Amino acid sequence: MINHKVRTHRSAEDFPQEEHLAYKIAQIAVDPVEVPTETAEMIINRVIDNAAVSAASVTRRPVTTARAQAVSHPWGASGIPSGAGAQVFGVNGSYSPEWAAWANGVAVRELDFHDTFLAAEYSHPGDNIPPLVAVAQHKGVSGHDLIRGLATAYEVQIDLVRGISLHKHKIDHVAHLGPSAAAGIGTMLGLDVETIYQAIGQALHLTTATRQSRKGQISSWKAYAPALAGKVAIEAVDRAMRGEGAPSPIWEGEDGVIAWLLDGPDAQYTVPLPGPGEPKRAILDSYTKEHSAEYQSQAPIDLARRMRARVGNIDDVESIVLHTSNHTHVVIGTGSNDPQKFDPTASRETLDHSVMYIFAVALQDGTWDHVKSYAPERASRPDTVALWNKIYTVEDAEWTRRYHSADPAEKAFGARAVITMKDGTVIEDELAVADAHPLGARPFARKQYTNKFTTLADGVITAAEQERFLVAAEGLDGIAAGGLSALNIVVEKSVLDGAPKIGGGIF
Image (cartoon, rainbow, N blue to C red; front, top):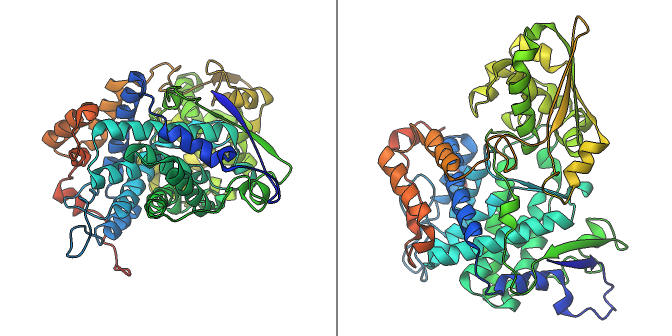
């Protein structure tokens, strides 16, 4: 890896385009280096993972709304130029690729149930898959080319996450997703450096937004934000292919992202990127979720399940303190100072970002369910509310250090729980990583990804359709050009008929 120093440059400085971060990323995108076998296999795992969580979310209102918007943009009408169109998860037909990416991106993100990478910034790099698949289907590329594009997209987003913190300045993490998706599409389509460079600049310029979508009373926009970034990336690549440019230098300019949205004109960041000919392996440092909840709560869920038997009568709990990292404390813990995180009537999206609620339910139930654990009647149970209000978080310097560690062997996203009983007994335990983490008690491999898919698809997708999809996904590298519609899944009509009725909009 090459560590690139990135800082603001005044317009009067001699700062050649080849030194711009966007250009260096574009060079990564055009590098013809082969994708390592283990990277390709993990990409297939994540394609399966995305399909699993899409099956689980397909009838939820935000997903239904996004799907209704997408199918209002069919492909193939008279006068529309060449291209096959793209598929929308759950239904037949061909649709405009940017709208297919939009609908599928919302389906993937809605339940907060797919992959994650955490470092200086946060990310869900599986959000790159919907826009790349949509463009791949529309342009008729091969499965091999899709894998190459996704290897780039994962690499770029994860490397940006390693080097540049957005949340410090309350900028949403999808500002790293727009550039990564644009770069990945560029690799997949075999575009030149200049075109990819311009597309990256446009995508970043148009995907910077505040983190209010993840603060206070969290709405369904939390699911829509990454879908919009993917849609914007497709449109940015399209404009760049037609010769349109972007603001530049987008990160380093005198009025650019670093100077005015991040640490300011005197700041310097270090962004690691693969050198020429260096394989793209970043996806191997990311991890998926066994539980439908914000990633920092994955290990606490497993910890609560492990401690449950030792606690005994939960009504006898006096208090619970979770010692954890700064990120967990201030984003999903009491350090956020969000009263909504203790509100039994809060939205699912808000409960998903309350480690106090999540630990309480996991401790009481000994399990976690993507529907039942968030049900209004579950959140409002008097005994749950009472326990919930006995839990608070504190930042522990060691957990913060481990969160930011560059050493995968000690990087951790867990917590130490100190449970004090009414009789004064203290029960303590800690868990560094979730059971499903590569270093956890039950690491996810192909078997676990497949099981997650079949479990969440049960009652939603027929057994025959499940099997057809899994065969296609596992053979992704061998799918010929024009065959990637095989990655779409059709959901049983009776299931879709049970989705919320959505009112008409503009389209």
